[in-house]
Length: 351
Image (cartoon, rainbow, N blue to C red; front, side, top):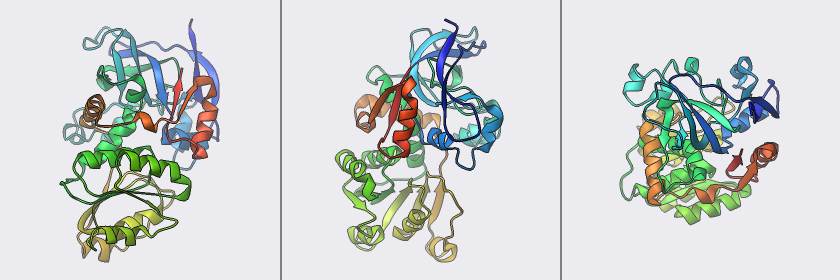
């Protein structure tokens, strides 16, 4: 068999296609992975909808989507010695040069060569197919205690852990997570593991099931921001002090400013989301005079990947409850629609 079925972004407009493409060949420093599980990421959904800021992908089309995945090594290049056929692996989405200031200080997602080297499922064909090619440096072996499903969604977990790495969470520190999507719920679990208390998660009325899940896994308190004022609630819970750390993962400009308001003086607002428009904020009063810090987060470091897999293996981080849909590859359209309509928390595709 020389072809495989794949989820393809073929044109710069909304939608995807399911089609056949050749099974890829590997270079000496690459590995061919037989995909067992592939997750639909928020980025994949944005590409499906063709929202602004993804125009750069046009020149790489047609391209196979999918950068959250796990699988089994099928073939290794002649220069690869660490991995062997049959190894269970997951992969980071993109290479970096390994030599610049950002790479050697553990921030490879800031490497200037990252885009030219290409990212899986963006500039390079991704994992929503039976086989995908990866550079050997991107791979992580999956612990025996971790399933293919859990490992497939390690990428967004690593993003959440990268956000946690940007701040110091002390035992008893009040932490708020604004947004209750997959990354938000993982952040809540990570904050709880680090000793934060209380851990507060916010959402909308349509997020009722997600908020309930957050409460069952990590949150001490959940807030429906359409019913209660989250700033007043957080201030009440913290004796008027405010949250030591706020993670903004909702992508709402209003939520960003609410996060800044509920943050205690000297606190950290960690921004994982992206926004459809520029944000206006009171820098003089809220940043300068209250010595608050706003930190951006992009992707996950190798350390974050390792920690995520280790905590999954130890059973301290629960991600299986976050998987709401399991679909064969040919039903990918259904999975994307479920994400867009917020009927799904995490959709995984089974090639």
